[in-house]
Image 1: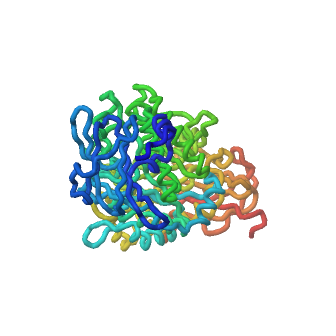
Image 2 (image 1 turned 45 degrees about the vertical axis):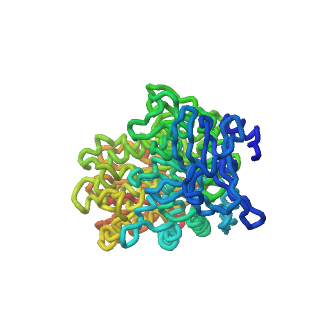
Image 3 (image 1 turned 90 degrees about the horizontal axis):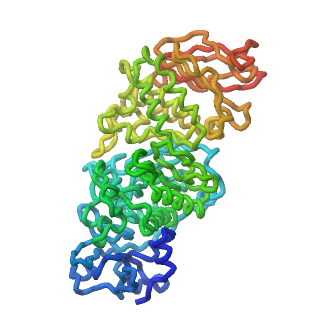
Length: 623
């Protein structure tokens, strides 16, 4: 048996091995296209013996003892058969005499739960046809391009009539046309790597190289990504490198030692989630996780990752009082360096609720190297404000204005995610105060604000048609609501906001540049009116945005504007087609020479109740 290369183990131990999946796991050995043998290799430094068991040997461990091919604890065996699609496990006998049946940490596929065996997969069958998309992605940075993210849970977007899951191949037929029709640029999938418990939503994983078999095969998922790309849709994976499932067949005490987790129980046990934390300071842990990320980029053409619970990696247990976690910070820097070293315009998005600085700054500037971060502060403040009765909103006006104090300190995604519509928090529309009509009016204003605030918008599935109930993680979305006029109108409004956000350059070109934003009036708390300007790189191309967040109609409302000439209303959330009362500015709005704050020109408009109004400068010759 060939010994594993010394430099491979050096890189593994120092957290520098970014292709560990090429050295470990089950690999088909081919002569041209013919499989001649199957090789299994596992890293278990605390093991005394390791046995390969599977359907091919009736799970009898005595038949296939694995050879220890390196003193560091690498075990391997080659079987002169084509074992593709065969289930297998490792039986690990520790130096202290314990015995564990374990799934392969580097398995490329796994049996459908509740079974826990790994499956030998052929990675070479599917041929991608997304070359044009991949080249364009490589050539173009994402920052000044439209990015509207649709977050979804694969198992409950739609289900089959019997309630079972669709495969990724099935979703191609249904999801991609839906995303294109509604002008989304990216889909973000809640975790789709293997996990034992449906109710964890994929956040408690056991297989970091294995696409969950719940939704089909390896090739089903490749086909899904390929078809998304051929239709111009990017694919982002929600990825969880902070903690993992403690199920017996997984990584926990993999070889009888705490191989991937901390020795210290107080750092290891994640009591809140019932999981084990990774020890991100260990080289083998870093190599495992970075290789997982690179695997999905290389093998599945993934566009990037939303990294869950980044604050738990920056600080011990996410608690600033317990101090920074040097291993976690080092890991995040190695991760970003590895990804951007090969894919310079990938997406690496931090779900980080802390105030740790320079999360989206490059490594050479002392940052963590992400290129986006969820703006959790904006999300929390905005939802708290909108939940308040309009009569009280004037006392909380700063909840909407404060975010602009730091909006350009990082590159932000603005998330209304699944976390905000579960566990009794209510759906977006049900959070809103007032009667039925006012709830939807507030909801439309909220969606409009999401799209016009600097940053890249993210919306969780079902919110686009104002699902009234919270997300139910055991059944499909309430699609029947689209038969009701208010929900269908909300859906139409979301589609139009997405269209504007992909066509109006002022809404995406300078999302991360303070030159792209200017207040008209941030201080009108008494009337609960907020007004500002979004600029494209060509400042002549700009939009005037006004939110009236009370039920009172405001006639002859004066606003300062940056250009002389004519403005046209291009959207109003109070249009009847969106379920509104039909109060809007139908005629062209001509400026007049009168100063307003820093502006030399003014216009007078009508503000509909609980609405957002968007105006576009036409030119100074329009009639």
